[in-house]
Image (cartoon, rainbow, N blue to C red; front, side):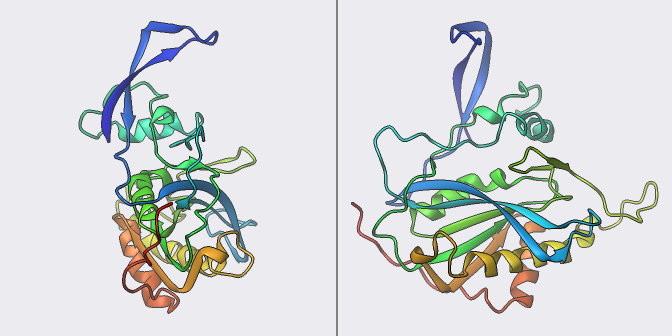
Length: 260
């Protein structure tokens, strides 16, 4: 991230010098397209959530896609006000991030345009699914998602409930991090391995759902080209998803679209 600065404002809109906080801005995308961003709640009715008995497996996905730039359009948000303290707590061990105000993550500047209409020239785009690291969150991959979308990809970053720092659903529920059942006190065994099968199943379900007719970006998509990538545990889950699901078959470069 690029460090900038901003002045926090009081509830009446006036600046308060006493509340000056560091600001962070993601690097700008490098491709020719403007980028749109949306979020969607996905429910796998055919699979029980192993970490929450009695509930179907639920996911949140963040989408980035080639968009039509419009003057005055509002950018999306990195994370919500509710998620910001949880994310900042997770940053504490990162160099230079100790002691940041807990609302810092909510103010990170991104480049995706909230709910922007897709670019009219975007057709035949490959799909890329992204899976974040263990104990992370979907916005952790925002810079990568924005850059890929600016280059003509449709990108979906999943957040995996239970092994994410927290997951916020549209109805206001917050699902916190949870270690698998059956762990003895002090057990530092391979937690990542305990989550791997669930993550791979999440990715396979999401690929099938996001390439199905009727999903909002289907007209933009080349469903025969779907890839998956991830960070840390997300990378291991991506490899396992590719082993299990022949639908992950992305090859080559995205089609080139004229910039309008």
